[in-house]
Amino acid sequence: MSVRQFHLVGGTEVAKFVLSSNEVDVIEGPLGSGKTRALCARIMRHAQEQRVSKITGTRLSRWALIRNTYPDLKRTTIRTWLEMFPEHIYGRLNWGQPPFHHLKFPHPSGDGTMVDLQVDFFALDKSDDVGKLRSTEYTGIAWNELSFIFEKELFDEGHSRLRYPGKEHGGSAWHGVIADTNAPDEEHWLALMTGQVDLPPNLTEDERFEFEWPSHWGFYMQPPAVLEKLDNNGRVQGYTVNPAAENLANLPDGYYQKMISGKAKAWIDSRLRNVCVLVTDGSPVFPMFRKEMHISREALRPVASAALHVGLDFGRQPAAIFGQTIGNRSYFQYELLGLNESSVTFAPKVKKLIADHYPDHDIKNVMFWGDPKGRDKGQQSERTSYEIFGANGMNVRPPPGLLQNNITTRVNAVTSILTTLDRDGRPRAVFSPLCRTLNVGMQGRYHLVREEDGELRPKKDRYSNPADALQYLVIGMGEGDAMVGRARAGIGTQPVRGWKGRKSMRRVAG
View 1 (spheres, rainbow, N blue to C red):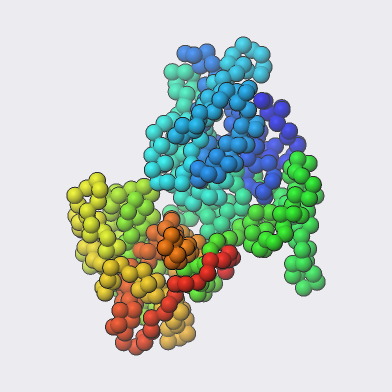
View 2: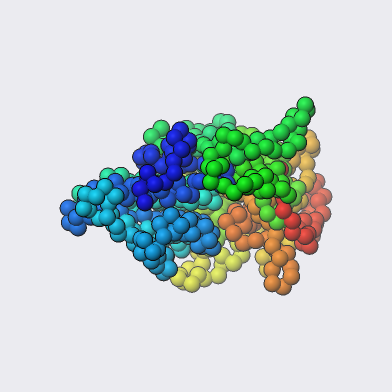
């Protein structure tokens, strides 16, 4: 298949994306807009444009095509790929781990050369999969549904693997990263980098640099699939299909009209109108959390005279939350998340963040509150996480009064600080917009699931790690006193059953 055989409509964002050769190109649009097919066509286009190898005489290229989970990879990404490049023409796809497809076919120009394209299909749903990405070299990386890749470190890691074919073959005509996506969450790094949501004010130059979209990268925003119908007061009364939407000719009759039925506004905004919102599933652990109330509009800066507390969650996806109590309010200023790494790697990162952002605080005086399980020895080390942090000058202690790591005590401690006000009537819990993953979790992504024993418990995923670290931090800062029967003077909060027993339901975070 050549690009000419992929049905491009001139002037569309899909056409611009498929024909571009920027080092990084991302196309964003609604469901059904042809993005995934455009992604696959772009891979094939670059494969056909490769230089002829000085060694093999073929046009060599190797790609990683990535989706966030294996079921989605198998059900959508690979299915679309095989519809475009069927096995009876291009050879059988090998369903190993990871799946891969090795395509060899004559160049469409008839010049006698062969196109030799290898495509590895990855699912980055486990931390160990990052190691697979690091173990080889590629011509290009293609991200299918980039909005589900929440760690920019993964995107950056892929960008660092572009070295195939090497100079001995004559090099590559192009190396790069391409991606397709629906509208990402409003807290997603892509939404921030592309200016779809405003950056917090008073960022430092280094913090602002992290969110700059390089001028030599391409970003292609497709038109919305549906338009809102508003009454005279600006309230949404319904939706109509956008006649300027892309790929309409290839969709079944009534495709978007049927999709709208029974959907929440946030889902329609995100999936069909191409607007950044936050859509959540399940019953949130902290339904009392409100973005407009608890998240500061500006980045929170450390106060030299206030004690520094750090909450730590260990494991292969470690998390650290940094906070200070000032007056009767607790300020959560920074988060640090690890990716497929042990405490040996993570501890120095925690120490460096403190040195960079809290230069007035002696590491010996910082109070570290860790998961009590961190006192257990790891499978690959005779040292505990507590001991590893101690070797880096950080004395970690379990939160006071937290018996058997009781989840109810932990959740109720955070619930208490979220639901009480200071003497001036302001929320006692204040979160910096720089705590992006924690904030998204608090808005509902940290939610309950019913486990095999029938009990509702917080789901263990990327949002639970910073949420757990927050719970250890809050108890360590003193909020847990009321939860374990030692009420803090002047506060008088009582234990609150903050989560157990609520029914699961779909919810849009506010």
